[in-house]
Length: 318
Image (tube, rainbow, N blue to C red; front, side):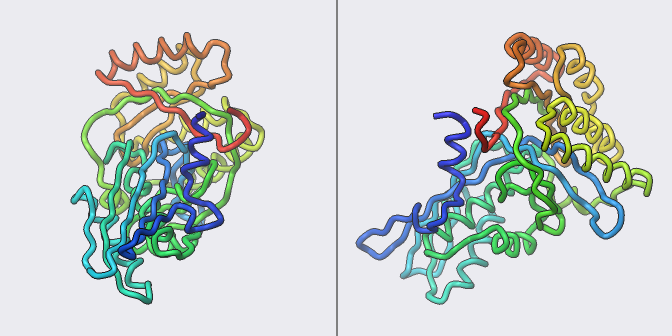
């Protein structure tokens, strides 16, 4: 199965919310669903005027799988693993809105590392909401999920397939930008962990001039996605990573940019509120294999670690 086929089968956005629900003879219901992660953001900053903080997603083929099994005879909620407190809070909020009281067990299984800027927390929460909706037989459209999430923390736009601009602090969609053909991200981790909530409490030291530049970058990126211009997408991502240095500097950014230019990559993408950086390579590039090998070797030397990721196209590109 291709990554995009897997993404479609795991999207958790089927028209029938009970499609991923199983009942047993004891009256318990089990719902399963997923949410994908992102490799940082193609663009993140502050727009002029009331629009404010925003980001643009880069979906990757890594997921959180959530399974919720109801327990009608018990009002308690149990979450596995136990440190997933935000998911437990979200589940409790959803159960408070259910007419018939119930408890249950929520199990989260994720391939997204925590605290690295790959939207692990957002994926946990979105997958939890969808799984709970499936188990309880209630619809969980993005707008309803957003209404819960904005009461918990700033959130990435992983509720929506494709590339989207998203107000992560307000937890609402800004605009859908479209689809991109698949890319490989050769990623490194600079180490440590970043708390999303604490990061978003930091004041943004951007001037009015920089706000206008972010507006122009968003317009450039929207046009590039529409045209399928991956080189321009990479250029915008690189500029966004550079502008973010005043907020959360990456010590290896300039080295990664130089490496990207040396191998002929598309650009450098950053986890603006995380610890990760990646070089973008077009999967359709006839020199992809050569570029990938060179990037992996150089990144391993630069950072002492390297992981490759595949972006999700959600379209007919696979």
